[in-house]
Length: 399
Image (cartoon, rainbow, N blue to C red; front, side):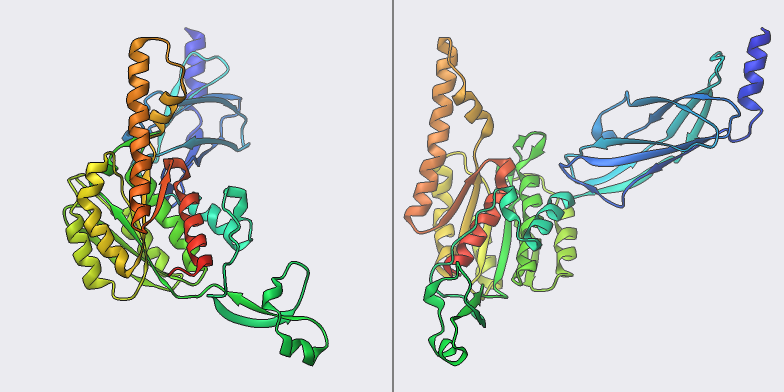
């Protein structure tokens, strides 16, 4: 009994014996591992044994989050952990609870901090920053982005410079060479300020999840990263989202501050995953997008019959604009195809999976037959394949 009262005195004699603070960023990045931190300090005159319970947002469905450590008086302790959200929106953190005990460990004193902190989860800011860094430092190949050889000279003239090994001999400027008495070449840059639209289908076909993330959110993340790269390359970027109606339309503008407008629009996308109206999409593009533009259409087709229903509208858009239809491989089916079939049922499932996989490639060929650019991609490779296609189209001077 004496030890009980001694422990009671030790734990409650010190006012505010534990201080704790949860450090949250202004925004969390969807589909990425986000680093969060809890900072603790102790005023107890003894080594305190603490158990930290952070009430995570309901979206994580995690009710057993706990961290145990020991605190020495006056020595700050930083505890870091990672969270990967897979939905956009507002995430509310509940109480930050700390249970502390003395070396006697008879009693535990409860401390409660920072109830109801809200942080928004935005489209993948981390992915956008990664591609931004690689683009500005010319290291895009580190993420699988290809170096595209320029075809012809469809680009704008930039300057005359001295020839160095590796320059295209076809760009030698003979008049300048004669004047300077050394080889001089014309230097070109990609044509600038070309309008580019990310068009996102928010309908039923984009609901399917892969690695916890819907195809819609893969498209949203890709659109943000791509728009940033295109703006850094001085093109105009815009956004259009649709399902049974036009939900968002952001005209293409060439200003770096325009990225915030696009980011906020992507963050606010909500959908009931209804059937999409491609006829209405075509009518809106015809009315609102007057200049020849690059249209990156994020959608998905599971059956060639579904593609053929929308084909007239796709071809109509491709007449005036450079249309790239982006749709997705079913990576779960591809994994099934790669497995060995050991019984009749497995053979049946594998055959069906191969049929669906073949149909995807037939759809790609059907579009290419009519001159429509396509990307058939794994969801996790969407951004790198989209930027590669953009660089290819710019290099070929197709827009």
